Image 1 (cartoon, rainbow, N blue to C red):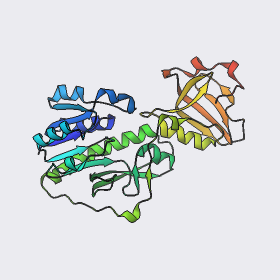
Image 2: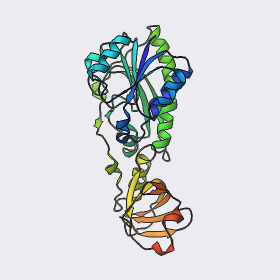
Image 3: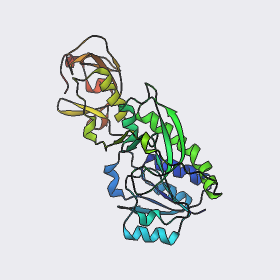
Image 4: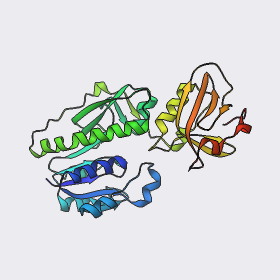
Length: 305
């Protein structure tokens, strides 16, 4: 079975690598051109994989450009897999492969559709979600479901741990579903539009700006949702951008918002509306530094914004 793979982020790379190690027949892989790197915090191309496994590695600005459509027609794949890709495919591509185009979405379709599903799942306080493989049509995440498997979102889970859960689920699901497709014994399940809840919008780095007047839990949730492989929640201190990758919190007592309450070698404690947030892993102006390289006892009582 001839497969074309489309993707351009860390998740894509992990799934493609797993498939290649399991002898899947990848006729070509399409990925973002290097000029797109700044658009994706988890950008990862397939250069190392193409050198090792010797497949056609095509870098594109837009998958729907005529030269890409023509190349896909020439290859005439049995199936196209789209794993970690933001551009919608046009009908001209969707109609090419014998078995259709399979996409992935780390939500419980059809309940939640749209962009930034992992951060939004945390921000919305979901207790569980799912990785869904579905048949791509011209709409947004609305094609028939091929497979859907659930995972928990614990109170301590963050974007990084959920990303890892989704990646491992993706590996578990891909080979068994490809075998079903190759044998033509797969089942397509229509999405029930009555179950749709909302369409999530795109998130930008600016959405990670911390408002210290919010509750400790809200701030902690934003930090969890914004951490690796995403740009991180941030604040400003001494006119420098302080990115917070990991934190904990307490809802005891009330403190002045943004006030530095305590500092030691391992953490700094910041007041907020109904408690405080403990910053445990930070970087300053995109440089990874320890807490005591950024803060000292003279900073006690100062305000970060």
